Amino acid sequence: MTRTILDRELKELGQQIQQLGSLVEEALSKALEALETGDLTMASMVIESDVTIDTLRAMIEEHTLRLLTVQQPLGGRDLRYLTSASAIAADLKRMGDGAGGIAQIILRMAPLRSRSGAQVSIKAPSSSSGAEITEASVKSSLIELGREAMYVLRGTMKAFAEFDAKAAHHIWEEDDVVDVRYHLVRHDLMAMMAGAHAIPALQRDPCILQRITYLFWIAHKLERVGDHCGNICDRIIFIVEGRLLYANGMGERSAVLIEQEAR
Image 1 (cartoon, rainbow, N blue to C red):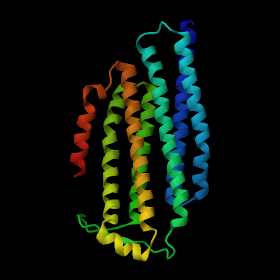
Image 2 (image 1 turned 90 degrees about the vertical axis):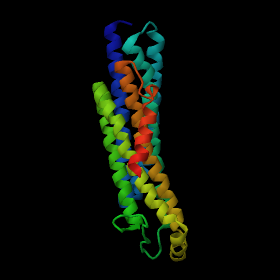
Image 3 (image 1 turned 60 degrees about the vertical axis):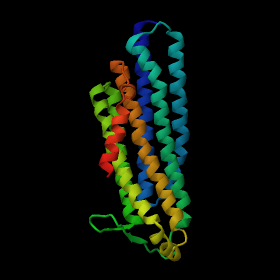
Image 4 (image 1 turned 90 degrees about the horizontal axis):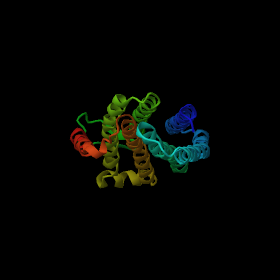
């Protein structure tokens, strides 16, 4: 395989990965819209799009393996790129699975809506503002968490398209923001499930704990988007600079920072 053909193949592979990123971003955006509006049709569309995402991921993996097999004497950046492509596609695919999972949860929550339509409100004991926590306020926080995750995803795909290691490093650290938002949402949900509040809430609405549990799952899936973006950014830096951030112990530094900011 000549250099010209290889360059063309690598460019095509990059375009496939960017297309996969666009499909995942669209699925996540629709999942957040369905969460905000309660649009079950939109949620169903997200679930259906999972087939397209899985198919494109398989194509990328096949394309990568073919290039590795045909062009064996690769070295340097080309080899790092091809050995990273499947991992990047896998992380994108998992984000797509997360969007589909959120959509499925939205469909499962639909029959659990409060018959009275009333919102269960709980005053957070540790809230500095003394504001009440409701399902509506938690859902609003989830939407903000999702938007932050979307921001990180867009930045990640831009860094990939431009092979911008500096931007990838910045975005890798930006995942801390997603994690802090996740911890805040989790705090509110745990406050709602505290025994002193949950018992009277259950008396008014027997499905409240089921819905809160589902909201926990959604929060976790949104938090995982940031983690997968961090993995992709790590791969971008590896492609460009030949080093992995996790190998330098930066993952431990990040975890410490998250705990400090969440307090």
